[in-house]
Length: 333
Ligand code: SAH
Ligand code: SF4
Image (cartoon, rainbow, N blue to C red; front, side):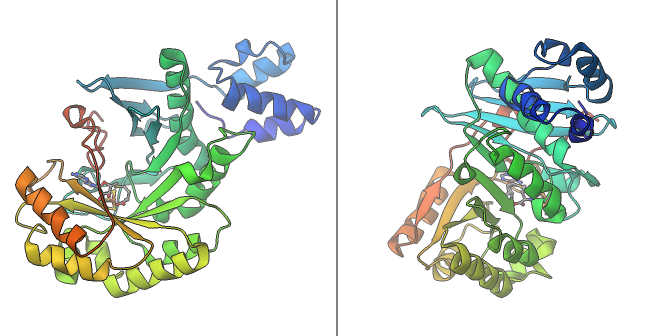
């Protein structure tokens, strides 16, 4: 698929054609312009030539049949991974990549270990969503309800393209997904958080925290050196002041690294603010670290609850196909 010339081609057509073509692409989810019987033949042919819609992909299904991972090969040959999670309550969440690989090199992350290839453009980000929209329609007569930027890459290192993709995801003439159902996860880039605070968009922000201790966090996430906790939390508070929206702090438990009572107490201290929520999860084994057992998980959670911190804990999805967050590495390249 390559829709980079989509708007350019339609600019030279009568103006109502753009709406028609958008409806075909994002609404009807056609995969070939020859299906566009309401467009003139010459335009269909031109679009098929210059704006092909076929997506090169391979899908893996998890044992539980509820999560799916797609490996998509882009026009330029780059490979990216994206995930669909089908939840009980009728939610269908897709997890999008913003880059091929990631330059930030967090030590626990498979994407980080795979190195960095490039940032995706708006259309390459949208291609993943269009892929799942078609997949859900064909196989389940369902629609995407939620979008999270938790696939490969750091969204704030690709700010403009990510925001521009979000605008089309949200647009009535695009995929029409509610802004409140779209989330960005960041490793904690202060500039990106401050910038997002000024957007007039009601999307959700998640911060990958994983430690409340600067030394440990820097060891896990080198990005913490230039974006230490005090500055990170100051940026989050600024975001909350501007948007009055809740912020989710992702905390992934790794055995012997960030799972002690002391770590929990320290986390409780910095998380004790009205619109802060902690999302506790277990580590999906992708590197030298190990997940914690249920007892340690529950104990950690209980300490936070005792301190009246809002905590949610995340069910583990699709780890047998390595579709869980942070396990995306497009290994088959
Ligand atoms: N770069 C962004 C978004 C992509 S990572 C970020 O770091 O937030 C999405 C989430 O998966 C992050 O919270 C990340 O910390 C987490 N993650 C990375 N590796 C993981 C692993 N092996 N198990 C569980 N979560 C992981
Ligand atoms: Fe990049 Fe996020 Fe992985 Fe860190 S956790 S290496 S920021 S994708």
